[in-house]
Image 1 (cartoon, one colour):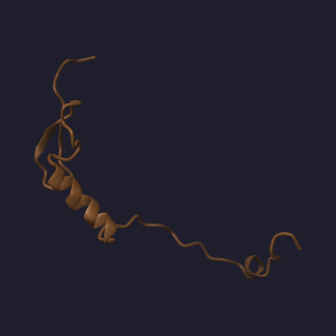
Image 2 (image 1 turned 120 degrees about the vertical axis):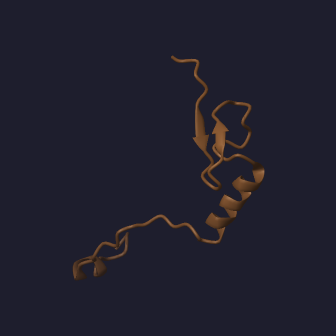
Image 3 (image 1 turned 180 degrees about the horizontal axis):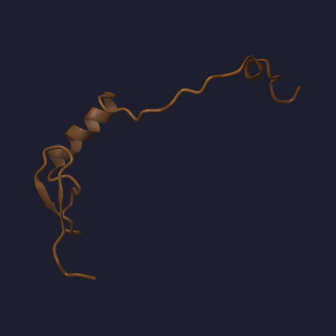
Length: 67
């Protein structure tokens, strides 16, 4: 394995962050960027896309469990 220091871009501001255990907020450059990103998820500014599946009429007429 190489001893070269690896850098990643902060997902929030793009600053270069060294990928080492001492980088407390990695992959973010700071606590501020980490909290701003968390706030964006909490307020649903980011969303994970999903495909909606069509349901057949037979799927809707299934009996509840135990019957």
